[in-house]
Amino acid sequence: MIHALPKAELHLHIEGTLEPELMFELAARNNVQLPYRSVEDVRRAYEFNDLQSFLDIYYAGAGVLQTEQDFYDLTRAYLLRCQQDNVVHTEIFFDPQTHTDRGIHFETVIKGIHSALQEGEKTLGITSHVIMCFLRHLGAEAAMHTLEMSQPWHHWIIGVGLDSTEVGYPPEKFRAVFAKARDYGLKAVAHAGEEGPADYIWGAIKSLGAERIDHGVRCEDDQQLVNYLAEHQVPLTVCPLSNEKLKVFSHLEDHNLKSMLNKGLLVTVNSDDPAYFGGYVNDNYRAVQAALSLTDDEIYQLVKNSFNASFISTEQRAGYL
Ligand code: ADE
Ligand code: ZN
Image (cartoon, rainbow, N blue to C red; front, side):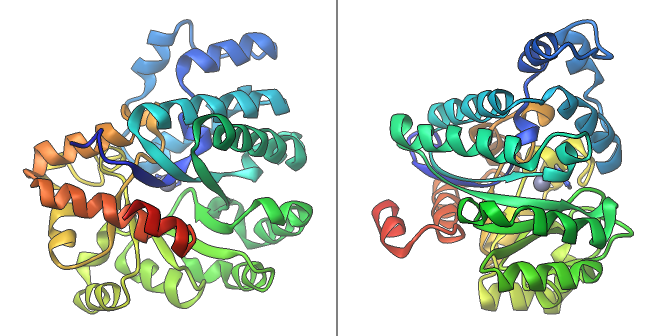
């Protein structure tokens, strides 16, 4: 059933789709020295205690991405996985600062990603949007600089997001940059309530104007917030295998996805960084279905939510629901 249902993916970092095999291929192509001897060696290193222990390895891995062709190949490989999983629409994040801080031009990154997405729509029929994320740990000034740098490509970017280290970097710090992004006509989303408290979810909504919350699993700590999210149908892009790997929940059986769904929240299932967390979107659906005994109706609701929470047009949405 999971495979048969066409679905949308709304929480996916394109850098998080870098499989070890492609990492080695790009390292060889670009003469980059990797701290690993083999693909197996890389996979063995993917044991994380929390978000930060993952981010350290993840940002290092992105170092092999250097040319427009590299970003094209990365994105193309992800779209082929989408096809396998019957993902017909995807809204992908990219982290420009991870690349511009290493001397890679913004243009190189966006052109490679965009051309692969265009090709993917033509040859695979997969539609997409691109969301540019600011790295919290680099602060608001650097985010503002990145927003200005991105201006020539705003017609290829639907919105801005906020990711990286959460605790200690509350959304309020980024109020001005998000206000400016919204003035430019960009939509706003933000990672909040992954490791950080429910207050950060309020902050993302109230200070940043976030229309969608990435993760948001800590919302159940605040009943008023749950009521608000349910009443306003604020989408939460939940990533079960990510939450398990980064120890947001000790066991998938403890995950609150079913509980949030049963409270009427607009929750969706997504893969976050599938190359690092051991599964693409269908793997995430299958794992939570098994761990939480989700019924077919609940799976169908999650898939329906994926379109309702997306930024596709009403007409396109009507074709899927
Ligand atoms: N960047 C990539 N994956 C992330 C996650 N799960 N949380 C915050 N930043 C991220
Ligand atoms: Zn994420």
